[in-house]
Image (cartoon, rainbow over all chains, first blue to last red; front, side, top):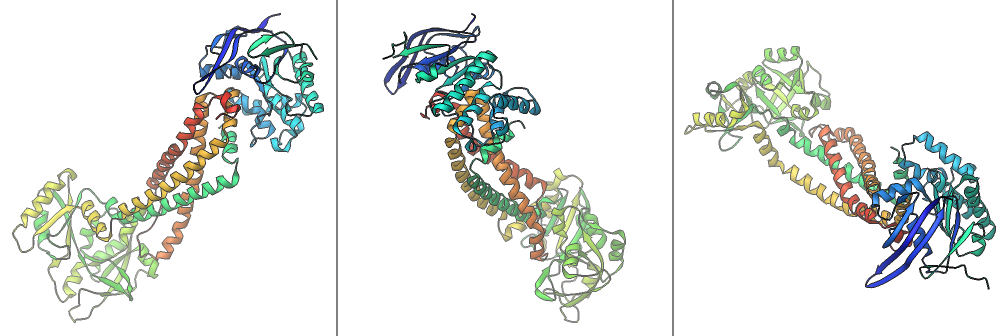
Length: 229
Length: 388
């Protein structure tokens, strides 16, 4: 299968005052196109840092990241922003919707960066909301929605510009089990039926079961899957 | 336009705070509009001054009269193309509070000198023909409900008639007005015929208050002024000639430097607005750091985020400023009515609108740039993890 994400020898160092913190130590990872990967590991293992690097939210200290044949670790801030807009959809634990905008307007946000007309933006946002089962909540503000609905709106926003890659950081961390299962089934559907490559950070083994495969990080290094106790 | 809903939503995220901020900006701009109108009214004499007009007064005091015989001698100065005279009458109408300027003039010479004044041809002809005739400014006519054709009883505080009475009577034969609202304030006067006035007054005959001199070339104003004054040097009635604008500014400053006063008040007002709205704007952006980080995550570049924050400041000032200026314009008819025509007409002209736009843009930049810079420097990862 074609490799969508190719990571080689990635290191990431943060500086907090005089303290030097190396979060990732030479990570290698391949993610084939159409894969659904659960990135797992204990707190502080570097999984969110790795996810941020894959999604182009941050740049590595060393190593290379190639996504769909393009090396993104050397892109400037502006180029990286344009690349994110075109290729990546983001889903966060706390939804991160803009509270002053309706669901429809939130979903339209990524399309503001395109040349699409206002009518076309509205049409596409409505399709995305329909896909996540929230067409009837288009005019609602985030505070008028439940947690699960908010996360569905966030997923609609992530897919509205038809990105290749969905990057999800603990997408069910703030949801009850039943709602979490709904959201995970939705991600599974997007992966299976629409061919989206999904990379999901989670420390919930049940959530990870929805993925095609699991990748483990511990102390900034890829490890074998730990044995269940 | 595509970002307007986003800007609008950001601006009105906290409605009460934004409305209060908008109101404070609106009050500042309403004050700006009103004070500018007052300043323009006071400076209308200077602003409407003609660069080709000079004023010749007595050298040491403008209340000292000059001989009427000077008119011909001034006409002979090279570069001079026309001369008119005017004399101060010192009028009051009905009671002390109804004071307005009354000038004794040669009708044709004076009206030729001020083409910016509009007088119906029939009225002008009647004024030139009628020795006891008078022209009155449109606003005075409205204020006192005069009618053309009526007698105009006016008392003078300076000039008694030959019989010793201070009460004069003229025939109102026409109305004087101006199309430009800035000039209209200069028509708040009554013109009387100097031929009749000079003959009917008890003292001061053969004298006039000042001369208005039209020259062919405004760049020669200084030289011609000097030539006129040189002509009367070492005579009992030495003169001081200066461009009309200089004279008008000097005259207005006798009341007080309105321009400086207005400027100082407005600086204080806008400095306060700058601090208040700047603080509000900075706080509003601080609260929305995670939202700005999300926009960056979605692909909004640093430049676009900077522009959005600046545009929000511009929108805030545009809304508040427009509201204030519209309020100032709406207040003008009421204020003009309340002054009863005792004050030059107040109005908000295009220059005031342009100045307001420039001030709004300046304030918007001043309050928008610091948070815009902060938004520009925002690192997504730090902002999303709550480190910014």
